[in-house]
Amino acid sequence: MKLKRLLHLFLSVMLVFVGAHVHAQSNGPSDTLFQTMQSLDTKLFDAYNRCDLQTLGAMMSDDLEFYHDQTGLSVGKAAFLAAIQQNVCGKVERTIVPGSMEVYPLKGYGAVQVGVHRFHHPGHPDDGVGEAKFVTLWQNKDGGWKVTRAISYNHEPVAKYGEHGQLSDATGFSQPSDGQYLRAVVQRRNPSLAPQLDVSSAYRSLRRPTPRAQYRSRDRV
Image 1 (cartoon, rainbow, N blue to C red):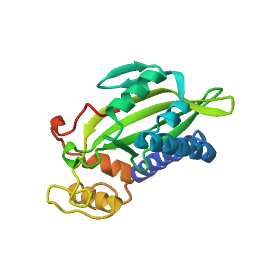
Image 2 (cartoon, rainbow, N blue to C red; image 1 turned 180 degrees about the horizontal axis):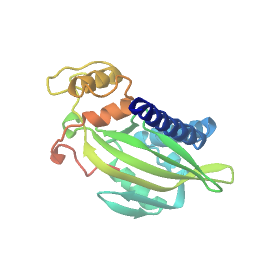
Image 3 (cartoon, rainbow, N blue to C red; image 1 turned 45 degrees about the vertical axis):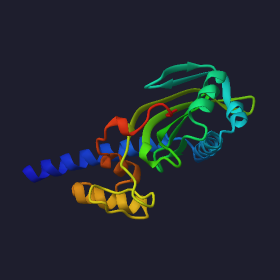
């Protein structure tokens, strides 16, 4: 009798899990929308990294609202571009953490994009590498996509890099492949984690507290 109850409980849990998984898949964004957002993100931050203010401006709505957890609210495209020119150009480069981006459709409006991005300081490794979560609201209007609202928050320093730009742990060990290295270190530090743990989750689990002074807040956007 006890075995039957355990079997019944197990099957019930599995049905709930499978049902939730199917529900999540059915509500997920289409591949086309995801690819569109991925392409837009690449174009937007290629312009950001090259200080191409003309392209950046063309991808922003005039009434843009940009929220930053440390600098607060910035209203309007002009204010945003001025901040980029003053604080980012030639000082900061942004990359998205692989596997972190999620995209969801907004009926009758456009889409919302969420993810995790990193900020590097070319030529100034002592400034450290920063990471933050982001939410971007895209409006699809008159056949074009523009950013109307953006939030960048939870800024914090991340693991230091080794001699060749490779992530290294406290032992100084590093590997050319971020993905392989992250999985290996996660397994070493927390064997209970599954080997197939995705890279973005592994990266978050590897973060070590670092004094914020090592990462300058003046040039994070």
